[in-house]
Amino acid sequence: MPAATLIFRFHNQSRYTAAALLAAVEIDHRLTDLRILVPSEISEDIVTGALQESEIVVIAQSVMSTQVQRVERETKSIRKTFGDRVVLIGGGPHASARPHDLLRMGFDYVVVGEGERVFPEMLYRLKTGKSPAGIRGVVSTERETFPLPRDLPRVDLDEYPPFAIGLNIVGPVEITRGCPFRCKYCSTPFLTGGVVRHRSVPVIRSWLERAVRERGFRRTWFLSPNALSYGGRGRRPNRAKIEKLLAEVTSIEGLEGVYFGSFPSEVRPEFVTEQILRMMREYVANQSLQIGLQSGSDRILQLCNRHHSVAQGVEAVRIALDCGFVPHVDVIFGLPGENIEDRLETLEVCNDLVNMGARIHAHVFMPLPGSPFENMPPGQLDEQTRRALGDLSRRGLLTGSWGNQESLARMLAERGGGSKG
Image 1 (cartoon, rainbow, N blue to C red):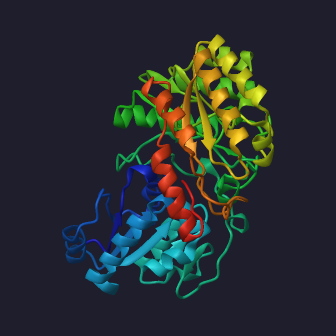
Image 2 (cartoon, rainbow, N blue to C red):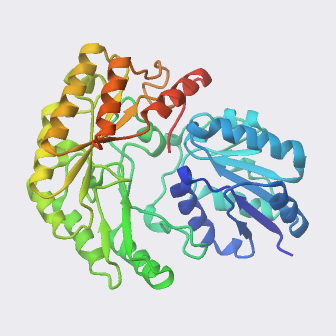
């Protein structure tokens, strides 16, 4: 009988975190006898079966703020049914910014900051009958000190796999973590720091070769706050490093498509140059390029600390089109300080961009913990904007879940802030 079973609750929204954390568990030689289950729902039967087969059952979840209502319901139900017979561990963006939210829900331990090093150590200690409370970055009812992610050691991406090959929990390869731009609506610098860290080309290639050989990978996507920051210090592109990455991975036998600069990554407008995009066109399979403009008002861009102008965003779209990409432009409505004139400017820019050949991906501002805007009012659309977005959507020129995000923004504000993963 295995000494311990880990039930890692899988949710599509937090699948990238699941892949990274389970990869770290998978390579830890101390945990080779750990039984791992990755269900999309935590049913009473699953937990009961685990308790019958193991001395220790750990249930773990990575929590984004948009998920807190669901997580709270599930956690209270598990605790009511199984009491202290299971150990509940929470992590993820919401845990890092609001760890005591999770303790109040009923979690035993909460991981603050990056989990690749901490999570396997917690499991090892639980498996061997020791408390994880003393681990740096772990908050619990035993030790309620609230560390900030910036005060904790940063993970070296090269030391960990990008995905869990053995469990077949795979996804995009995270190539960069951290961001030096402190956009006021974003929690990334709070969560992962302002110094960019890159997974090296040899390590990326090695894991992709294994994925092709062992899991039949045919395509791969990359994950980065700004794909065009790869290989540099984050403030300007490093064309040589980007080309080295693309040349190496596209030469892997059996890998038929490499997607770079498209969802789930994006690129900042001021990083876009014709030279870089023409080079990319020689390697990548994606026809789209995700560009983060965020507003059509220079005043709002300045308020948000974006460090680029609307004109640079429009120029990035033009260059992308000239180089054979279809730009998908991220725009956030309802940002703090936005007035009707700013919103009309943004709608006008959106219309100009779609007339050029771009597509718009619309969002509504949500308050994110750890960001300067975490306590600002939630974004709310006026009727004119709602009609304009609906019209673009019906014409197939705009995508996004702005209606759902508007509701989530209100919920997050009522709870005192939220986060995204």
